[in-house]
Image (cartoon, rainbow, N blue to C red; front, top):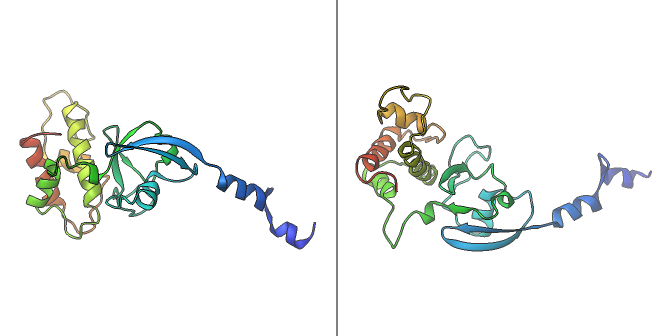
Amino acid sequence: MGATAAALTISGITVEMAAAAVAATVHCSLTINGDLHDLDLEPRVTLLDLLRERLYLTGTKKGCDHGQCGACTVLINGTRVNSCLALAVTQDGNQITTIEGLAANGNLHPMQAAFIERDGFQCGFCTSGQICSAVAMLDEWKRGMPSAVTTHGAAADFSDAEIRERMAGNICRCGAYPNIVAAVRDVHQGSGAQ
């Protein structure tokens, strides 16, 4: 085998094989913020990259790209998910809500309004993920899902420790945590999870 052919083969995969794999697409249908999208996607595209780079929904942020910071949190069928770890094609048929989809009829979602009222952000980079996570977290609480700090065998108290534990997957590098906790508490005490 010549030097050129050897250079074009890595672990038995030829350049032609790699090019064919890249060109392969999978059809899927996703409902994003209430709008149906019929898409042909490469299987390796993350939901985060689909949202930001193809659908131009840039409210969802790419922070660490490893599922550690929560800046990319979206709601999939009401459950919070780090979109940087979810392959877009695996979401076929699912309902996806981003920060752009939380507001209704020109009105902010109560959690969005509470974050503004309580200054639950500074630079704003993590805010969309924090808000989406908080919305889903309140729904988890409402359904009785325990956390690592939930007191078992007694009526659960929606304490600051409970809020912090449930929001632990979302990092705020500016340190706006006290205001984030206050915003979540306001929505819980006011209108509850929406």
